[in-house]
Image 1 (cartoon, chains in turn red, brown):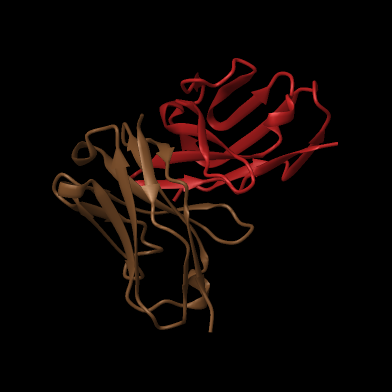
Image 2: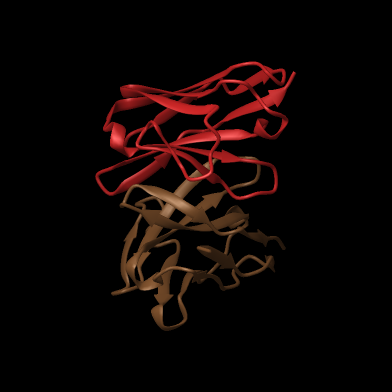
Length: 108
Length: 118
């Protein structure tokens, strides 16, 4: 089973700042199978990025994904108030889907 | 609009049985895998299993195999997650989600909170 480790656990930033979230896999993940979600308190997760770098429908271009192999990154170029939330990465391999433990982006 | 609507909050006692539901609309329910995902209080997301309503093919996360049963009724575009004997450790929010390209989950249902307490 591929384990995803996200860092940092919590990111304290101000609106307008850049957020860089990391997702590291215990073994290589095909870029096609790396996904990012956003979850706000009391809400279901929402798809942000699939295939490591493709934005889902309706996702603003301040969100971008990159990476390959075992290291993937979600970048929010300029934080808006509505972006403060928890972000999860997820991968698929060998009939198993696993999630990272999440990174909380909080207002500084 | 593609939508998954889940059944409401459940409060149960240990040892009781439970079946929660997830109804799809706005897409061909029979032709997409539907997943169940657990989120324990204050914790992250755990994939439990998937079902293909078209033929009721089910695949479980080994961690959940034998602990829950996933089923579906394609005639009413509904998937189910059930327990025969609940434990306090089953307390969580359970989400259903449509699986796209056998890869990512979108959209998600609103979640069903299950509380198991004596």
